[in-house]
Length: 176
Image (tube, rainbow, N blue to C red; front, top):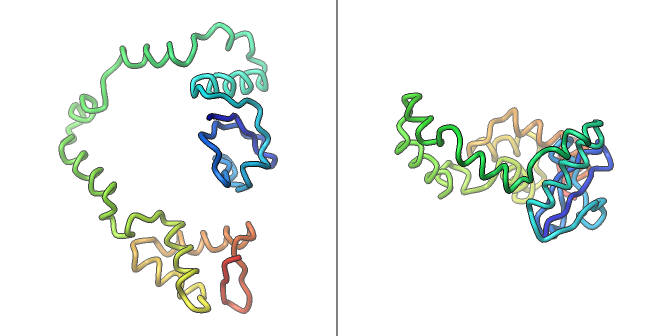
């Protein structure tokens, strides 16, 4: 199932696949329960969901007539496959070894990038869970040992606190 959902904070629209417990706005980062998001269109076809979102955006900007003249997403996908150069040809033309790029991508997918396969945010959250009465310095140390930059950790702690996912009292952080 695919649904076109909207953000109550910034009015962004995006397509969500399935029924996740929570969804995050790709524009402003607001996280809400999926069930509380406004669902404008629900469909089994991802192309239909994309077209509905695009139509809503075109209407919002006053370009309904121009949008009506466009082909469907599935037809445009076919056009894209037929024109231009593929990724491998482009990279090779730029002097990049595509075999090395493929090997690097495989290493990242296997999680050998140093964080055990976790995202930066997941690493910060893991530090908050695993450390006893963690301070900012404790979480920064935990995350930097796992390859997360200190500036990112500090920003993440600030955002998590602002969103109400974490509380800070007397320099000590606690997950809510």
